[in-house]
Length: 282
Ligand SMILES: Nc1ncnc2c1ncn2[C@@H]1O[C@H](COP(=O)(O)OP(=O)(O)OP(=O)(O)O)[C@@H](O)[C@H]1O
Image (cartoon, rainbow, N blue to C red):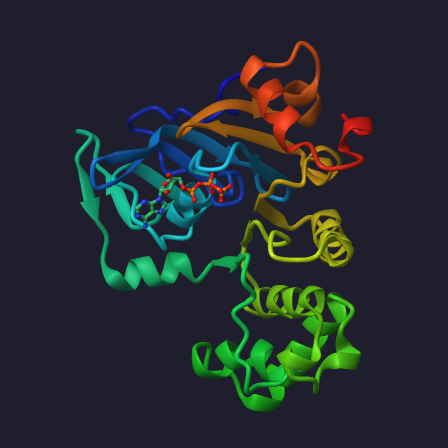
């Protein structure tokens, strides 16, 4: 098992990696501090395209912060992040100097990333379809009719076409989260980030959201999922990254990471967080 996934180390004069072969996300030496607190300490992580990567670790280890840095909702204090080879936010020159990219460049690379949060953040005054279509019309400038067609297709993908005209208050938490997933999918992202998408759901509603995510994973989308659902990570994740105290301690296949002998910190974490039923999956 390696402490980091295999990364490309191009020769200084070699061309930029071609988008088709570049990883979906490459995180290099990323650090993040909030005031005097160092939350991320030099993270190197490669997220392969067309696969599901699960980011696990104890509470406070920095998982959400790393995901938010990848979505550029937080700015990494050090290091670089590329999306299919394109720098996001900052570029690093050959001499190691980090420069901030233009707002247009940041917007354009960010628009290729979708994100689903723990809270669904739906507009309460809009129907499920209205929520899914809103950004298509206002941001992507799509005609309403075309946006609604695309929105219906995405609602159907998460099994909610029959709830298109319902308002969030008329939907269960699991259905609201599925609408939020449809909204992210409608923008056709190259990579979809999930930040503990089932954490605010009752256990009986968690399964329906995990099933949708399982289907998306099976469709060959690139997913990066922060989760405490270890059973989901072990069965759906093709790559597992274990974060502890702001460092990437382990990164590999589920078998490599969860198999015996287990890293003592992982063993300790699993004892604390293991969700019901996961023990039999590992
Ligand atoms: N905006 C912020 N300002 C100050 N400290 C922050 C901020 N965001 C996160 N932190 C701190 O960074 C550390 C890591 O938080 P983060 O939410 O990334 O952890 P996590 O692994 O996702 O935890 P959890 O599993 O509980 O969600 C925590 O100590 C948190 O208090």
